[in-house]
Image (cartoon, rainbow, N blue to C red; front, top):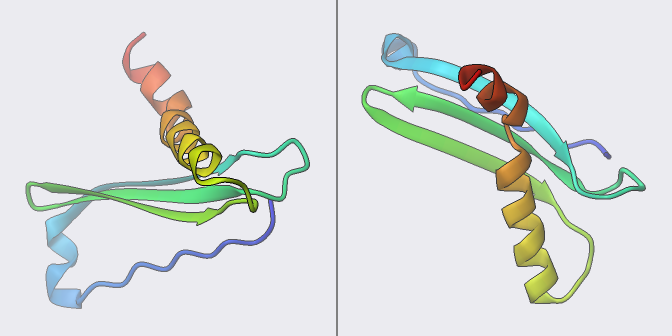
Length: 84
């Protein structure tokens, strides 16, 4: 996958409210030039998930399917560990 950079900033006064942070990268192409970086965290009692996506030029239906695939693959190994 090419280079994707995701930066998430917060105020110093809010750092103690953030927890359960994780990030991963997901490739959607056999050539390795399309995919996403996915970051998730909790702020107090609210969960956030941020996707930074690089998709190939395709029709809308195919691109929507790729987003679904990214969501399914993101943190898969982490989820597999939780349910063993």
